[in-house]
Amino acid sequence: MAALRAIREEEKNMVRAMLQHIGADEAQYPISSQVSEYGDPHMGSINFDNDRPDLYDGDLVQCEYSDEDGENVVLSLTKDAEGKLLDLDFWKSNFTPLVKYPTPEVVSYKQK
Image (cartoon, rainbow, N blue to C red; front, top):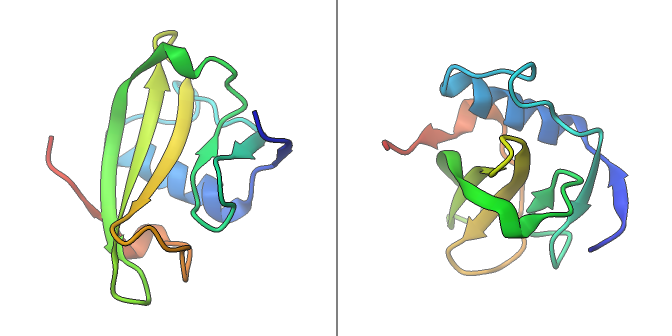
């Protein structure tokens, strides 16, 4: 696993907004103060200091936005089988680094 670092405020804000969208909050899904980045740090995906990715138990919520280069980006907030946040995964359609990190105001939510 990659080195841990402090979670950024913009990441926390995005996770809080995604949880709020599904009627959940930090009491139900605590947000770790330490995260690790997956792969290229400019891609946005983080793990919530959860060393058991094998316990992946699905997406809590997905949203999307258009990055400043016009490319579509999908964000998935996932949980593990123990009910803890696993990761915030970014998927950009052309696999290039994020130009601008999203804010809750610019995303639209996918229907489940």
